[in-house]
Each structure stands twice: as C-alpha cells, then as structure tokens.
Length: 571
Image (cartoon, rainbow, N blue to C red; front, side, top):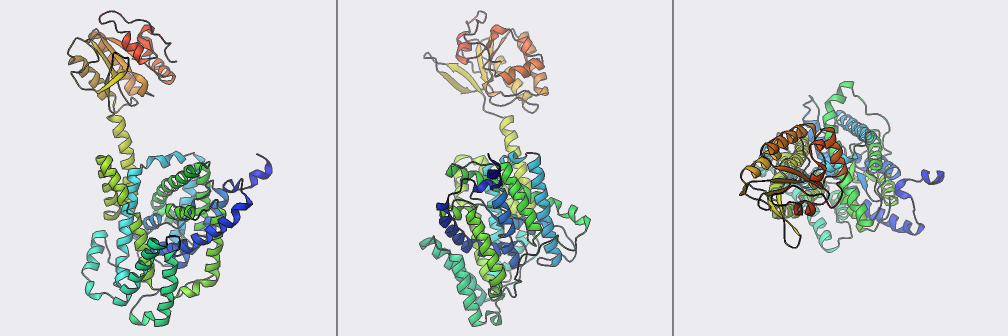
C-alpha cells in the first residue's frame, strides 16, 4: 500500500467515478427518510429536535472517514436513544428533566464516555465481544425496545400528558385519561401513520415520512393548529452544531452516567458489528471490525463535542441506503451535507410541526423493531431460545432498557455456558460398511460387547468435568457386557483446564481399577500438548492412541490388547 493510498479512507478505497451520481442520489433519498426519523429519535432521547439533525453531521462524517464499512449509516438510533433516556431518568437527579440544559449536557457526556469506551475496546482488540450477544437475545432486546418506544408515543398521539413511573404505570395513566384526548391531535397522528403506511405499501421507494412532515406542517400552519389544542414543536434553534465540551458538568457526573455509557457501548458494538457484517457479506466487501470501532469511537466523541447524543450504526437506515443502490460512504457524506443545510436554513419551518407527527413517525419505527417474524422462526426451531428472547424483551420494557442490556449479556453468556456444560454426547458405533453411527449417550448403551466409544462435544473445563466423568462411569458401570475398552473420541475437545485435568487423572484411576483399557482417538496437537503438561499423556501407551476413529474401533480385538494405529497420532 503506497503512502498516498493510506491517506484515503478505508471505506472509499478503490472508488470509481461512475459510482458518484448513484451515491449522491442514494444520499438524497436516504436524507428524506433519515432526517424525520432522527428528529423523532431526539424526542425518544428527551433532546431538543435540532440535536437529532446534529447526529447526522459531524458523527456521520467522522465514521465515513475513519470506519471500514462502505455502507453502515451512523447517526441517532432508537435503541440507544431509549437507553440514554431511561438511564438518565434512573439517575434520580433532582430537577433533571428531558430537554433541560443539564439533561443535554449529561447526554453529551454520555456520548463522550461511549466514545472513550469504544476507543479502549479498540486498543484492547475487544471487537470479538460483539459476538457475545446472540441473535436470539438481540431479537428479544430490540423487540423490547420497539414495544417501549411505540407505547411511549401513545400519549403524544392522543394529546394527553405522559404518565410517570414504570412501563405498566405509564400505560395505566393514558388508559385512565382517555376522556381528555384531543381529537385534533389524534387526526394529525393518524394522518402521519396512514401516509407513511400507504407510501410504504404502494410507493416503497418514495419516503412517506418526508411527505407526512411537509404536508402536515403546511396544514398545521394554515389552520393554526396550536390554537386548537395541538402541541407543536415551536421555535427550533438553527445554525451550525455548537462545538465544545458540554457545559455545567462536574467530575461527579462522570461516575453517574458511566453505567449508561457502558450500556450504550454494548448495544453499539453488537448492533453496528452485526449490521456491518451483514452488508459486507452481502456485497463481498472486506470488513475490519477494529477499524469500525475507531470510526464509532470518533463519531461518538464528535457527537459529545457537537451538542448532541449517542450515535450508533443503524440497520434500518443502512438497509434503505442499500435499497437505493448506494455503494460507499459518499452517500452518507451527501446525507451529512443535506442535514447541515437543513440545520442552517430550514429549521424555522419546523416550528409548526405537531408533536403528534413526530410521535407517529417514531410509533411506526418502534413497531418495525418488534421482530414478530424473527420470534416466530425462533419459536419454530428452538423453543428454549424463544423463552430467552421473550424474557429479554419483557425485561427491556417491563423493567428498564439498561437492565435489559445487562440481562441480554448475562443470558447470552449463560447460553454459551449451558451448551458447554451439557453438550450432546454420543456412544459411537460402526456399521459393517465402516460408517460411524451416533447414539445419544445413556447408561446401558455400548458400541460393541465390551467396547464403549464415547464422544464428548465440548471443551473440558471446571464446570462440566464432573459431569463428563460421571457419564463415563455410568456407561461403564451399566453396560450390558463387562467393558474392556473405553475409547474417547477427542475430536470435539479442543482444550482441558486444570480442574478438568485433575478429573481426568481420577477417571483413569477408576478405569484402571475396573481393568478397562483407556484409548484416545483423534486428539489434535494442542490437546496433546495440554495433556502432556498435566502428565496425562504419559499415562496413555502410544499404541492406545489413534489418529482415526474407525481405526480405533477396528483395533478392538474383542478381548485382546489394542493394536497399533494405522495412522500416526496427531501431535
């Protein structure tokens, strides 16, 4: 790579002039959808409307220049906005209300801390942590966020005050105040939803959200909607995003919002990585998660320094960009330019926009996050994982978004440990044609009279070592015929920790006391090295080690001693 090539952003290397017009047009189309959306996301985050526009300016430019993904759209996101709002509310700071200068400052501080944590993750090469949120948990989490986001818009759609307390108390609040609804407000909210749904159904390539915003602002201004009890956005600050550290903060504020920043970091890492990987695979592009971490880190630092809130890779906006046949981050740079133009020139036209219009946009975004199709697929294929997804979703909207993030992490790790602790184990046999057969391991099963071939499909570690040893002992004790050979098929065992090594020593003592010959089949080189360190390898005669499972089974002489392996043992 030449010195000049290194100066070109990774996401733009190999750019072709023929792509320019397509990228610019895709960026214009993306802006028409993204700008109304991020204004809605700013309401989820409890931030001034204009700050939603700010998320599409400097943060988008930062990722376009420093990230590796050619398509990932970075900006305000409903899930991280919900985490931010819920997290700040749970701080319990006296006088802290959404939209206040203190709220805006703490939101900016959260973005800065998220950027710092993402940078630390890059330095420590922690991009692999994105793999620890399973697809099941992520579907459940985003479904929970969708339910929370959609239900939170109902009071604004009805024109009644929002309730306080947990999710159930908030729903009870609007249900018990239906006599106070504003029919004018309902009309604006319903019109927004109908316009967007109709365009999505019949003209999917045309952004119905921008049509709803422009048309209903015009109607609101012409009819003086605010005089009829319709809440409107009001004056919106215009100009370039303010540059500088959030004001009015103290050192103690860092520790207060740190947990909120960690929750945002977890979701940013998981959602952005999953989105980047999906679209890179679709187009055969190279993906560098660690470089994307740099881009996401600087994007969030830019957000914190430009008066706005946490940004994330958006799967919905990235899908829109892909549908518009955008090829590179030039499309996102186009969107950033248009967003800046709107912030500088057109914010005054937003004053007459009814809040119900924003609520209608966000309500549909929330419904889109409820992945009913994904939940159905999980239910049809893995009932236990469906329960995990539902529990995660319930935790998000019923307990709290931040708690939902922590539960999502815990459930993902628990699922890994559960599979390692209780893998599917088999007793292996062989047909007359030499084809291995696998039967779930249960006491009373044998591979042949006097022979048990046992396959354990997990690494051996402290949590499952006792279960492994107990299974082997039960197979030996309850076999129909006295066991003379116990063949361990080690193809599924990549490693053995110290605790498991002690258990293996005890198991070899047990087998020796029962006069059962221990035979090892298909150990890889790394496992052999580990067994040598634990002085287990030295207890297995060389003629009892086979590099091929069929050879190990065929070597069983039905009463004699083991024969030599036809292939040299691995390692």
